[in-house]
Length: 187
Image 1 (cartoon, helix red, strand yellow):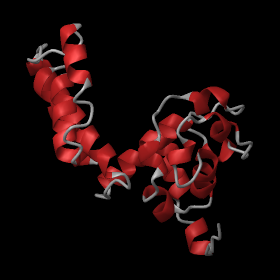
Image 2 (cartoon, helix red, strand yellow; image 1 turned 30 degrees about the horizontal axis):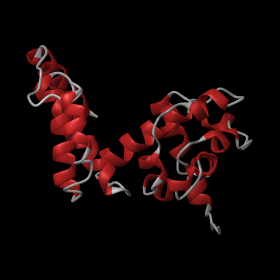
Image 3 (tube, one colour; image 1 turned 30 degrees about the vertical axis):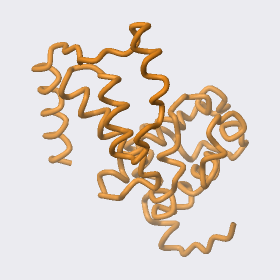
Image 4 (cartoon, one colour; image 1 turned 45 degrees about the vertical axis):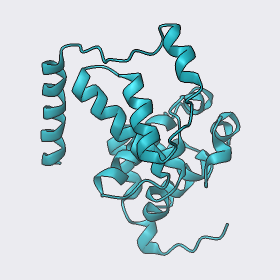
């Protein structure tokens, strides 16, 4: 991998922005590689977690926010647990996703964005997750029409998959979403 950095990129303020928003000390990362060694989804990433941290340190905003890695991260916190400097890398990845989303960037992995939108819409609409709606809408919107279709009857007859959503305090949930939208619009 070859990178050409200008002094403008190095002084971009990207690391300061990430540190402020994530409340993590990205500069504490000294590239030990423990995060990458423990990550269960590294093989799906275009850059391993420790390289993302280094790219942040170097001010490589464009490469980081357009990378596949930030969208593939499962936020399992294995990296955080393994980090000898106690940097919460999962929080950094979440912050990077938020920054990319706020800048109007498309997710490098389209299915992740589709899943994210359907998941949040279900929570907003029902106050909790409606699994049947999540799977059905995801499969329709991602083009995986018959994926997992064989599993549905087994789950349904075991009582693990409900045909109709159960709602819980939807007014309260819609209020939370309204407050979040207002906060996002102010930022």
